[in-house]
Image 1 (cartoon, one colour):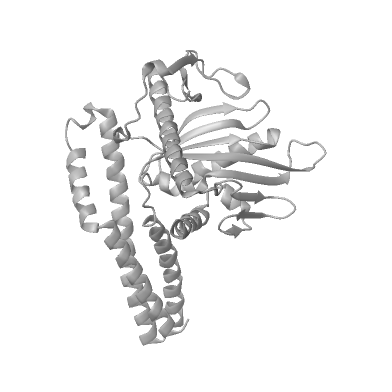
Image 2 (tube, one colour):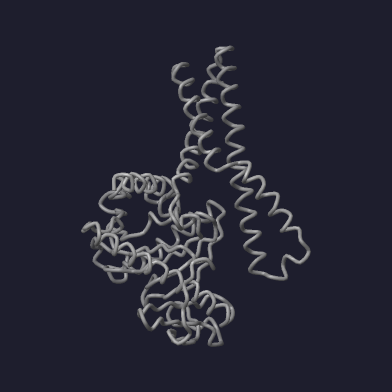
Length: 370
């Protein structure tokens, strides 16, 4: 890479980081961090566990964001010095080292820049993700479980807390459905581009004739509701059933009727939660999921009204959004963004950041075009 090219790229990266720092407002972030540290140090913090968890979760997030941006600024300043040193001493090894560091910084800045594109009404919220097996029988149920693992591994890679709220096991293998919550700010804005139908093509491990099978799983992503959302649910609109939690094959994993199923009678929406230890905890978790579904329903109705006024007849971008082909070749391809990779094993192990980033950028372009 020529010296002039490096100089231009370093200027562009510096401008990008400066714009990110302005959007994030580092001074405001530092003030919030100081306030959160004070609240976390209060002796009565854990008198209210829910409030304490929110404070500590937000503290961890703000500290991480601040460290991430400040670290990138230091690394960018250091790599400028490294290139100057390499040029002054005509040192090929230092040039290689500086270029490798520049590549890492470029990737990290790209990821950070995507965060600044998350400006939707609910993008800052935590996320509720539900995966359902669709067409494809036992292969679809197995695929649903593969997708659950993919997203949980993605969360684990980023140190994002994730909690499985409900699992419905299929009879032979895999899952009929699963719901989990990713407890980090901007989880909804980030993961909402994953919503839609995912398609798997492979030689079925459940077919004794070794035939190729195509199966489908649906991913739904909802923002977690907050007190400001005003989703009022009258008690007489609910039917609440309790049952015994169970695992694969119906084997009991709980000796009490602690699992909760809530049916919202006006809409027919049914949610359940069985992964908490007590009936009270499961009921609270199920109500959170129900509120998120009702919030989405309200937004969809509002959008439908607006689309009717605009004469909008376009379909949802979310359907048939990604294909995972394991046979006759290896390829994961997003059908909206054209993002693709041949490393299917890495994707299914949670390396999906490039797909998410491409999805966020694509969505922003669609919004501008609309």
